[in-house]
Length: 113
Image (cartoon, rainbow, N blue to C red; front, side):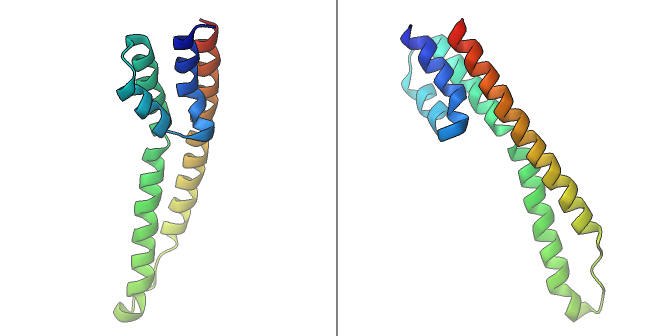
């Protein structure tokens, strides 16, 4: 088995043991263009769930701030934050699952080619 094919596929399989860390190290340490290309793609695929996670984190902070401020302002906090948090949590879980499956598929494809 070719070492560059194995390293290229490990970039994708790193979603299991070291997401983002392993592909970044390989990207900066490897001098071979095909391995660097696979490392960059693996990083981008593994960053996809970060977008709904950041939105979920921002919504959680906004909801916590609304509940913290409620006794002082006399306003009742709305339940809209909870519904949006639930939607974002499902979106994050779906993105995480899709990124995982995409990385496994791409890792197998890189190993075979």
